[in-house]
Length: 239
Image (cartoon, rainbow, N blue to C red):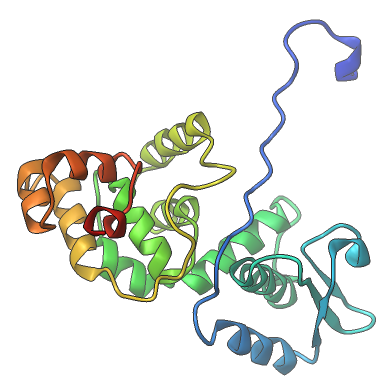
């Protein structure tokens, strides 16, 4: 059998996987200190470095010989916390990840589970959903500090939505460029959005229509349409 390099073939260029977008905004209160405590409990020290050039161009780096975990400071606090959770996963799962698995993907899933644990996911989304409204994802992102795409992954991993539905949403995100920069405000929010989440949950499950949802949120239907399509936030509609 012959193996060819891509440069030796004709046809359309191979697709380049998109780089994941960094999280923006502040981190949920207490998360950084909680993660630092877990890492120190494993016998490692946490360092903050000025930029990625000091850690081989990465967001974070675990040095097993020096027993340190470094995270670059030139990211928003939310991204720093996500990176620290990712590095904690490397410490805890280093000897448990099989050779057939992608260690980086496994650690990203661990970080998502840390930010949005199973009990919280089930409380917010229920055990089964046919669909999840985009604004519902945005409100949960503001509440838990996990990206909209990450929330969809959590919902799929827990069997709440199907793999086909998550892929459909991933295709939508890519088409709109949201896989690089998600819509909506940075997180976490200063206030809870439980009522708004319930309204969008009911809308996604067809328990109510758009007119009733707009009425419950005390806004005009035209405003609600903009919010549902992620062209505005609930706060902007009430401003």
